[in-house]
Length: 396
Image (cartoon, rainbow, N blue to C red):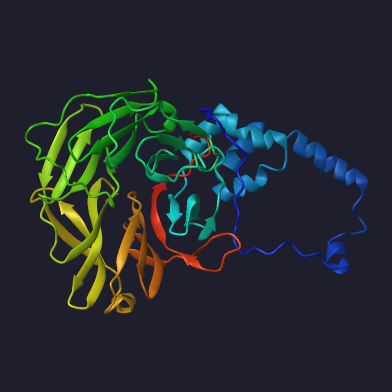
């Protein structure tokens, strides 16, 4: 399995019927008697002289899904992914919303991606990921997604949009216990390199530097941090200004690692009462908490904000009551994805399966269309996943 490979990308949309043949009247509609071959030649000449930089400037502003349809127009447009000027333009016009790369409960060997702008699910086939192992998305940064096999041995980094793929070198510390993973960029884009941190409950940890293409062990866990860490593996790490934050229990709170200075810190933050399935999130430099609040037979999704002065969670929003009525008397479990201001919640019980998005800035709750595998009819619930910033030019 070679590193640095990229493949052709195909976005499959479930339930989309094949294009039907148009009636002759409709095919002939719009053909006027004044249309001549000389007009067609003139149009070709106009487009031939159209400035290339304007082509790139326009295409860089298009939605990601539209670009992949335009790639098939000609080889020139298809080669834009390798253009340095196009890469710079894409960095100037980032997509407004993150996408979500997910693994569903019945389809663990392939992922499903959700575009919240178009409210569509896609089912990419990442050719170079190993097919003999279950590989799960565990972190993301700058348009790249970090994968870890279910045996917690091998790491992979991939751009899910372009399929640019890299298998990371083996870790220098042989730890087969479960690990929490975080990922940060060295700069504002993946072109400046990235770092990946794994840490396990006994305090062992390592950092991967993409510029050096190697793992290093910067030191040992400081003595003031209580071991074992009792990490919350259901909550992904949150990245803020080059620092990764991990949720832990016993004591309840957060541990952080600065990827630049190599300094660990511990914050004791009491968890809200009656909390279950807690997950860290982030918006505008503020650490958030998402979780289920259950009292008696009533369950509700709540959002908290960490108060920096008191190190206490302050509730700032909760799901509309009319939606929470669906949860009454049910044993509900929640998977929360996303840590960049837009969250996707997978809520499920024996009698229910719901997908919901939450915009932290606008405090807007929206229902997400069900995820169906290609040629499937049963709605899937999300087992795990991550949010990532869609970027056509990010390479591992």
